Length: 309
Image 1 (spheres, rainbow, N blue to C red):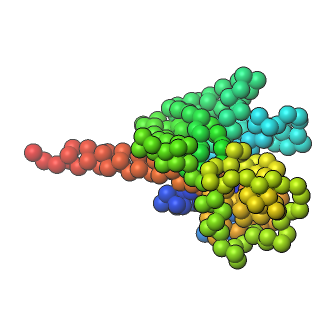
Image 2: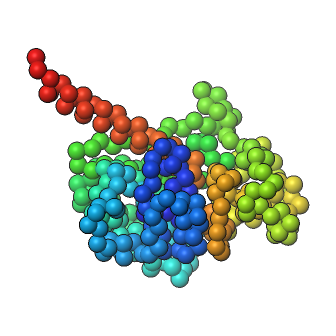
Image 3: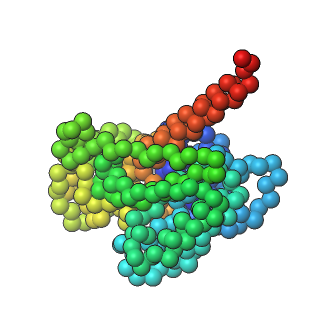
């Protein structure tokens, strides 16, 4: 897990049955959250370029699946003016090539805001693909509407999948939901379903401390019409309109399990930056099944090739 944030992609990988070896993030708050929730894995709290210079004689950084979630704010449609972290975000993206050389994965998955596909970012997008193809990886990408995969919010993301030489590309998950259901699809997963399942004693769920303000009531029977960002739910409060959303409620709209505890400061930013665990699970399940299938086919070829006739 490179640039793992607070652990959304990590949770999804574990749900899919993968073992997570290590994570990387330069944010102290995100690193603290990640360490707390995944104590058996190694956290590298540093820049990606620093990790790439580490000596690894035992090959502990080598993984079969490498997931990359470089910071996306600089490419986001919501990013309308320069930010103080823009240079660092650019550097994280351009570390992809070195990270692949270090981890030597069979499959790479990468999640980014769809804004990087805008024509004004053509150069960094082309460079990102080149960093994969320079390793002779085959590459595919798709902009996914995540509400059509069961996320209770409107959210679009660019998902890139790359396969090392000798490997084939795994598929991405197919859509399972639509606004009204039908044609074999389920209705959108409602915000009400996500919010109503939260235990009263869940961590990061202090209702008394939820922010005061002017909120309007809204119908939670479908998805929320906005993307969860680093600021929360785009100004939306609780469906009653009587209070703001707690951090746990925002996390539930991002599909974090209730047992995932957020530590440190800037918790809403940690949540908004995260890859939704439910979506990560679907992607990694596709990857895992594909690798198991190709490994089984390869083992069968070896068995047949070594069997006497």
